[in-house]
Image (cartoon, rainbow, N blue to C red; front, top):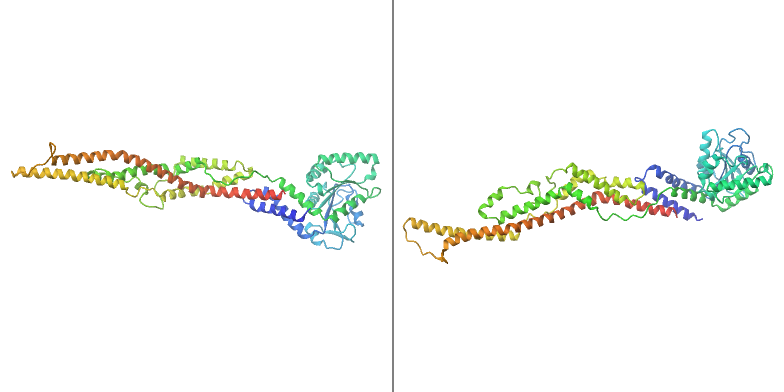
Length: 518
């Protein structure tokens, strides 16, 4: 096992925790945070020591094993419950393990000369079936950090449900750092001992601890502690127990963290969302007003000149909304109706549901919150987007001027004919000789000019009216597309960008978690 490999996986878990903070709850992240902190502390303290915990219930003889291995009676032995009330430690070797024991929170300490167990830090834990809660808490605390756990069982209580259900089964991912000892084997005959060991292995298999070493020991007779001492000596010499413990804890933590599928970045907007936002922004109102404004402005230029003043007296449809002449900071469209805002809320929820469908459940609520995070800014942003959009109707069209010029020409012809007839009438009234009267065919030329001018202006007005209507509808559709594009930009800034940040963070967490899983 490589130290670099374990450290890299722990670092990946650290990246996961840092990225997921603010998105996942403390309850989901707490185990990973604790492991990252504990891994850094444990590896920085000592890799030369192996912390071995003797764990068991009252009467199993673990304190006797501890004392025999230590060579001196350090931990109390007896029949009173609980026998072991606080943790005792024995350190083999000259290397100082003070900082490590301080980190473990163990005050009762003893040192032995180096030997085959050089680097061993042996702990005698309080009984985990103690009637005192503080004893059980102390045992649980040290079981969570020990490099190697030796479970000491008694022939009469090895099948205890408390031992298997609350402890051994809970450590099913820690097979690499688990040793099971059936102590006081001298109380059984060889045949009974074999049956007992076989049954114990069956129970351990059910606990998920298949393949863990099962040793038989006795502190007073054969087989003694030779098998246990040899196992501890090999573990200490390998200097791998601490890494195996961290790796087992890491496997347990990452197994409880959900890795969802890969999710692509947000690239497209839901059309229903854009429709709802466009309605709330008043895009249909502005598009219709643009169509009407086009008609209004075109007829002011192309209509019959003598009556154009009537058109000028009417208000401009876009002017009512403070739109059309120039880019403005705000419009006077007015707030969206409650129905329109309800449509926006529903579309936001649908969008979040669609984007969050492939995400694991814990990430869906942060995504919904991100999608709705700037909903209060939407009305002003949409109004400004509409106000700043060039509607393209402020400029007079060239063909309007051409038609207007024709209208004025027709008016000029009409006035010329009318003036000519008026002059002839005055001369007739004054009994003056009338000038010669040219004819256009059988019709006098002044009459032809008057009638022709009037007819031409009327025909021009009739012909240009449907053209203006068609062009106005086209202008309205074009403005609708421009406004919709502006609404999409607002949606990307206020909705897609926050949602993309969540998805990008999820992708970083997913990648880090995959590396943490190795």
